[in-house]
Image 1: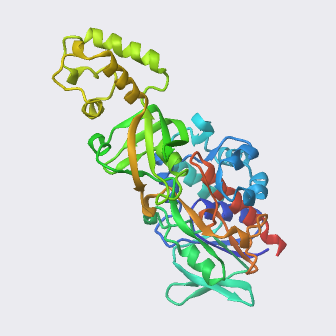
Image 2: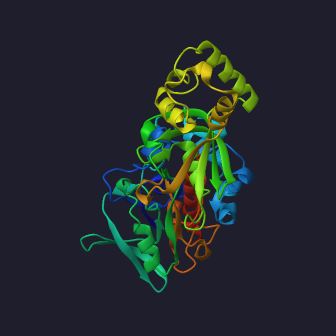
Image 3: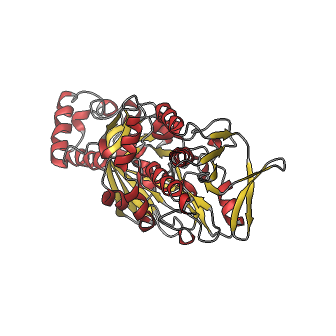
Length: 407
C-alpha cells in the first residue's frame, strides 16, 4: 500500500482521496484554502450539476478538448457510477433538461458533504504546496511553504485550473507540472459569460429569460443553437445558454461573433404575427409605448421599442402590417453583438492545461515522472456545460487513484 499526497481539496481531489482509501492507501490531502470543496458550492447556481445522465458514447461527444484521451477513464467510471455513489452516500438525485443531474435538495453543500464522507479517513492538511520533490524521474514528496516537506510514494495533482481563483484555483498545478518537465497548453476561459459591444444588455441588467432559444453566429453563420435560460448583466449576457454558446467561440480576432435570441421559440412567425395582431386589436387606442405589455418582460419593452423604431407616442392602430412583421422578426431574432469573452477569473472552467500527450490515458500517470498523477481541470481536457466537467474530474481521479497499486 502506498503513502499518497493529493494536492487540491476540490471535486477531483476528494474523489481521488476516497477512491485511494478504498484501496487501502494512506492519504493526505493538501488544501491551501480554508475549506475543501469551495468551487463545488458555486456550481449550477449553488445547486451543483454533478454529472450528466448519459451513456459513455454520448458523454464523449460532449467533450470539447481531447475526448479520445478520456475513452478509458469514462468507460471505467461512467456517469451511472457517479450517480450510484452519491445516492449511496445519502444524496438523492434528479435528472433535469439536457440530462443534467442535480441533488433533489438543490443544495451543492450536500454534494460536498457526500464527498467529505467518501474521503473520510484521509488526513486534510491546510498548507500550501510550493513544489514537488523529484529524484531520478521519481516523485518523492511535496515541498510546503515555510521550508517543510512531506514524503510520498505517489502524488496526485488535482489543483484545478485558473477559473474562479477566489475558490483556490490559482494555477499552482501548472507550475508543478512545468517544473516536472510537462508542456502546458495555454489556459483560456471556457464556459464563460460574454461581453457585448454596446449597452443593450446593460439596460436590461438583472433580467432573466426562460425558455428562449439562443443562436451564436460566427461571421453571420449559425455556430450553436439551444433553448433554455439566460441572463442580461451589466456587461453583456450570462446564464446556462450563454455558457454553452461560449464554448463554441474561436479566435475572436479572426471571426466576428453575435447572438440572436428567439423570444418565442414555441411559435413560428405566422402564429406569432397572429398573436401580435390579436394583442394590437385589444390595445388599438393605446400608445405604441404600451403595446408590448403582453409580449415581453417590462425591462425589455423600451429596449425592443427603440430597436423596432416605432415612435412611442404613435397609436397602436396606426402601426402598419410591415411594422408588425418587423416586430415579429425582432422577437424571433433579437440581436446582440459580442465584443469578447468574460475573463478567466470568472470562467466556469479553464480550457488548456497539462498536455495529455504526456499523460497515460488509462492511469493519469505522468509519462515523464514515475508516481506523479494528474486529475481534473488541471489537465487539457474540457467539455460543454451540463455536468460533463465534474464527471471528467471524477473519472480522471478514479483512474489515478486506482492505478497507484501498479507502481
